[in-house]
Each structure stands twice: as structure tokens, then as C-alpha cells.
Figure 1 (cartoon, rainbow, N blue to C red):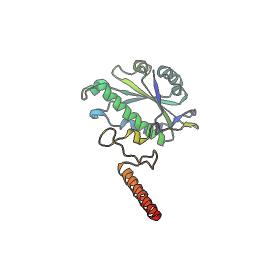
Figure 2: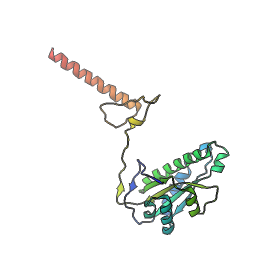
Figure 3: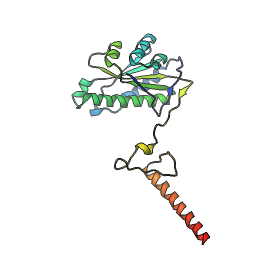
Figure 4: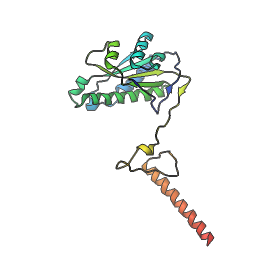
Length: 212
């Protein structure tokens, strides 16, 4: 079953506007995807931009996500496992990594261009490949949907940074009990923490001194 993910640092959308995305804008988004890192520097990603309403409807049915049909533009991101395998072991894992990096670049650039986006993965690759007449050696791994929206979905933080980030070894966290969930970075956290601790100790000593 397809999985829809609202990229946390990028807006998803509730209601897409029926507004064509400018070709120059899409060009910049695709350039960002093209320049993403690639395992072994192979660079096998390719893109099929779909704007035809009928084809978007078919694609929506295959991947199981209605926003693909509602939005004006979707991009199918393909890779070439055969070519990847000539230089990299575990070619499918490498292709997923390559496509993921490309997708991230495209969504970040799309957000800066005022667009909302949704990501769909985990669909029937063969059916999508047949829909876009892709060669047999090209495998579609992701569908990115782009749209303008007057009602964007607000991103939510599923976990605080200190819940998922460790230093030197797993489980080693640096978290200031005074700063809530905001993560300032290892050096900043330590500086803030010890500064506040020194201030607290000073206040305690002053109060103890006054009470004697």
C-alpha cells in the first residue's frame, strides 16, 4: 500500500489550487533534484513530469493517493538499478538513497518557491512504469506532488531533537532542563546549561547567606 508523508520541514496541503505551476519554476525544482548526492557518484535519477489530468487520475489510482489527482503537477522519480549496480553493491538500496536525496532537494526548493508538496512511495513500480512508458531498466520509486494551496497543512514535530540525537554513542544526550524542547546544539546547550546552573547556585548561596 502506498504511503503518504508530509515532509516535516515543508508544508503539505489540504486543498490544492487549480493553478498551473510555471515551467521555469518546475525547472528549478528538477535542477535541485538532479544535483542531489548519488552513491558512487553514479547519478541515475530521471524525472517524468505529469500534468495531463487523465494521466494524473490513473496515477492517483495506482499509488492510492487522491492529492495526486487534485494537484496540477506530479513528478515521477525513476532510477536505473542496472547502471547503479555496475559501481555500487546493493543497487536497490543505493537507488532508494539516491531518489530520497533527490526528493528532499526538490521539496526544499519547492517550498522556497511557494509550493506545497506531498511524497508517495511504496507503490506498484511496474504499474507506474507502464503508465509512463518507462523502459524496462528504469524503476519508478517516488511520486512527488506539487501544488499551490490557500490552506496548507502545518508541519508538526513528531519528536524533539533531544529525543533522537545523541553524541559519541547512542543514548548520550545533552539536554538543558531549562530550555524545553528547543535544541540549540551540543556546544550551545552546554554553555546555556552551565551558565544557568552557575546562576542558580549563586542565588542559592545568596539566600542561604541572608538566612544565617
